[in-house]
Length: 468
Image (cartoon, rainbow, N blue to C red; front, side, top):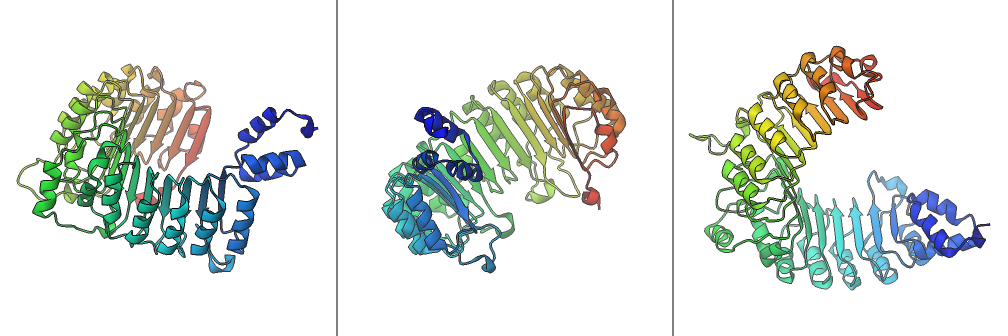
């Protein structure tokens, strides 16, 4: 029966089946589907099931000759599962996958720089993502940079032995990189990013995360500071910027980038010590197309002890965003975990100005003690708000939560670790069919019975270990 179907229809069926196990079952239903699946399969995800690794990978590459995207992950691997894929496995890929453009290697602990050099013959390779490949060094990354001229995406996550950054300078001269992610690579510091040079003009996405537990405290020398200040960093193509655990110092490093992204749409600043009001104001004035901002502010006890409060973010930052970013749809504000909340905070008025002046559809507040029942009352006039997330907002009571039923467009509500609300706060929502989804997590005074009927889709969890 399937053999009689038009080939165009069969291609459509294959494209709609996403799970590998389902595609394999479908391909076994008839010879025609099996043959078409061989041609149509462009993505392959393998790992612990490869045993013996080289023979199994060779067989798969021969079966699917048009593979363009391959993900090899050994998460949860143990020695009893068989030998991991090693450098010879990447040699097999380079020989049998002529159309390979996107390769992800996760927890591949036996792959070394030799294996990466085998990939340099994959001339179509444009995206390489490495997650915890501890034997890889800067030399291996450099060989990829030299051999794969079409590289536009490079992700390095927990690559602990990548210390030299000559590859970063080489990629900067090529000006092909569009998506760069460096996360928890201990030996790469904020100051090293200056080596990207003119490639800053081409970058569309940058993720840079410093491992807070093993910070490699690089000292800025005078030459490095001069390079940041003299090199006018233009980031006109930057769409997404994410910085985590970074030190942002005035006039140097990443502080020079924040105010030069004209087309930025999404920004995430998480525990970035040194961000000032003037940095956010400059960002807001330049990035008028901003649609999403997420700020996780360090507590006062994680900031340097200063005689003044110049490193504290205030309502001036929020007012600048409200005034300049008329497309802002998603706002997330969080303060650092710890016994003491941040005193350098945004007031209730600053938050409300942002929500009312911008078309905010998603609002998430975590550890924001200034947000209380008056804030929920003010949100009753938020005409765009569709999703609200309140985490550890301890000034909210049942009286304030009951006002949620009056929000004009609210569809999704998440409550987590809120001490002051009980089942009574949710009563106006029960059987009202107002909410599409309700998530309640670890709120000690809300019971599973209390959330019943409060939304079309409900998720309830209560783990109170966070309180002790």
